Structures are given as structure tokens and as C-alpha cells.
Image (cartoon, rainbow, N blue to C red; front, top):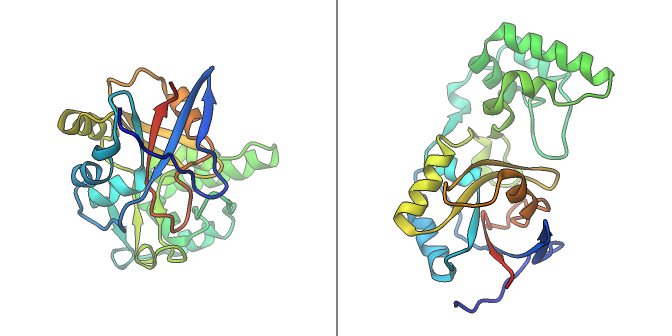
Length: 235
């Protein structure tokens, strides 16, 4: 057994209980990860020395996307009048920058087409009147809802590009297990919600249970440089 001191970020707890089982979470500090780095090398360097057989790691989707170079640059986009218009009516969220950012709205138009985005905006607006939120993203899909970046208030580099969701998240997690023997899940998490985008096939927990393990976002936000969380079942 590897002895280590589990540490939580400020305002977070090390321990959490899920369906009667207790788990310890440790936010793993890394360097500032840039485009094109190897997620295998990153995990081998920071996780392998402290990992035990039954552990699971939670990895921020943003880091995998950066390693995959899954970005779209502002300089390659032309923000049209429709995107500027629709973004004015988009609801702002405390979870992060959404399609109220004209670049993100333009990304949605480029990906889905003008008619689908217009329909999504109309349907979303009507549903909000009846208290139902998120309809715009339900219609436009996870590529739009999962787009990050296009703002530089946390990391200046992110002002220049948007970060798409990872490609083949489950395949990435299986690759990590095959090469390093480390069970992994890729998550889109913030202080309000946690979504499992992919996981190693050998993980015995379902997505709902895994999401509960990180429901308080133990990786934190902003400039913590802790995109990986080691999760260990308490003996």
C-alpha cells in the first residue's frame, strides 16, 4: 500500500459517501498543460507514483481536449450578425461562459446550421417562460454545450480559442488503462454539475455513482492547476 496524505482544495472535503461507501479524493497538482502534450506522459508523471490498483482518476475534459488539439481559433472564425443578435438573448450561467459569447454562438451556427440554431433559440426562449432551462443545448447537442474557452480571465491563452469536448473519451480512458494500468474517467465538472463523458470499461461503478463521487467538484475551478483527482475507496 502506498502511503499518501490526501489533500482537498480550500472549501472542499477529502471524504465523500456514495451509496454507503466512503471515498477519499486527492486533487493532483500538475504543471500548466498546453496544446499537444501527451496525456499518457502527464498521468504517468503525476498519478503513477501514487496510484493503487483499485483507485480511479477523474480527469478534466479540458485537459484531454488540449492534448488532442481539439480547439477552434477566433482568428479562423467570422462572427456574423445572427450570432451577435442571438447571443444578446442567451441566458448567462454561473457555471461558465455560454452562447451569450458571440464566438460560442457562431460555433453553434457553424456546427449545426442557421435554421437549427434559430429553432433552438426560439424553443429555448419559450421553454424558459415555463421554467424549463437548457433546451437550447438539448437541441444543439453536447459539442455546443461542452465548448469552453473564448475568454481569458482565468488563463490568457484561452482568450484566443475555444476548447471542444474530447474525441472518443471512452477510448482514451481504455488507452490509459492499457498503457498504465490506471482506471480513469473523463468528466465535465463545475461547482454546479458533473457529467461523465467516458470511463475505462473495467470500472465497476455506473455513471451516476461516479458523478456522485465528484459532485462537489474536488478539482476546483480557476487557476488551481489540479485537473486530475485521485479517488480511493476508504478501507
